[in-house]
Amino acid sequence: MALSGWFVALLALGVVPIVFFDDPLALVGWVVFVLLLAAVDLAAAGSPRQLQLQREVTDRVRLGETTPAVLTVINAGRRTVRGVIRDGWEPSAGATPTRARITVPPAERRTITTQLTPFRRGERRAAQVTVRSYGPLRLAARQATISLAGAIRVLPAFHSRKHLPSRLARLRELDGRTSVMIRGQGTEFDSLREYVRGDDVRSIDWRATARRQDVVVRTWRPERDRRVVLVVDSGRTAAARIENETRLDTAFESSLLLAALASRAGDRVDLLVYDRRVRGRVQGATGADLLARMVNTMAPIEPELIEMDWSVVPSLVSSVTNQRSLVVLLTSVTTPGASRGLLAVLPQLTRKHTVLVASVTDPTVVAATADRADRDAVYRAAAAERALLDTARVSAAIRRLGADVVTGAPLDLPPAVSDHYIALKAAGRL
Image (cartoon, rainbow, N blue to C red; front, side):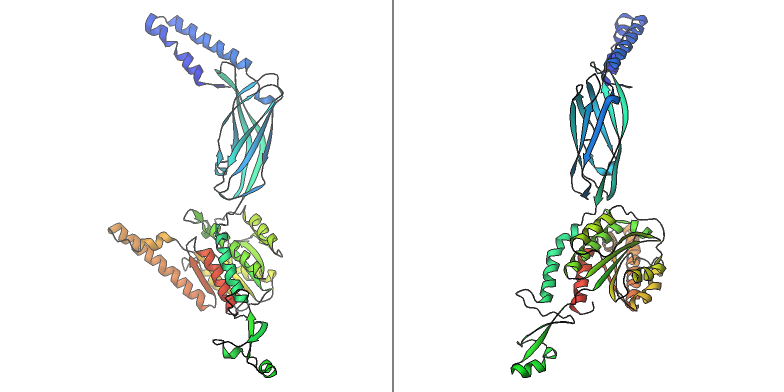
């Protein structure tokens, strides 16, 4: 049962006899009258328990996009249900409007459309629907909460896909398939063509030159069918929020862009999300199925507040492939202490694979180094300088162990990782 504002206003009118007539009995009589009126109104209200509810919602949506959730209300009772209905989506689903007024006569149905704009990745659920049914006088209402499960999977936004066309164009240039005619620097033989001024003399094919009696050079293209293994750290450092997104979300963006690029380049991509257990794995997928499986695997994963166990990573990579591969470790390289486990296993990985470590940096830390306005700002600048020095020390240690390092702000890291992949293809290191 619930009482409306009209009931409170009607009850407050009972103050009039006290003010003008000084008659307490009149006030008591008025209160009894209002209560009886509310009881009659409540008895005349339609029963919310007689409602049958059905929900229709899309299975999945990208983070930040809007999708409708349709709730169908069927009145199986004998009285009209007038009132308010609230579809109980969790706040991160971004449901609007949160409440809707309904009037459902007996044996009829109504539909209510709620727009969902989720602002967090993962499973967003609704467990129940609350209905408040008022009587004809709208003084009192019957209220019931009805269980009605619903869920929508919120996939990573993949904003970095806007960088894909430009990176694919650079790959085509490496393959020599555009009008720019840039000769690829890979190690896979492509074709022979006539020598032109500016070509590297080391690429001259002397046997073909002797046969044709004209100078002929070999052209190369980046090797295909290579392996790219993405290892995403989902431990405690991945939970840090930088520019309104977690490190894990930035790692997912970088992984998706690199996977889309590498699959178009003819390479095979595998994904592992790990902290102390494998939280997600994608293997053996190619083409459009690769990105679909990756986003579905990434969607429900949240960072765990535990330390990353790097000692298992070399065996995990070996379980994926035994051939030489590009292993991309998406983690944090902010402090020497937190990176001790990573540095310990790098020699095992670099001995067999080409290793790239990608880490997101905080732009506010860089900006703090330039602010010296007052004493507090100077202390903040000193702390920021120290943090940057720690990152530089860890990056230098990683390079000494034979791996490459790419760092950048959340918006800059995904294209930076893809650019490094293209550079490795161009240099014949992949």
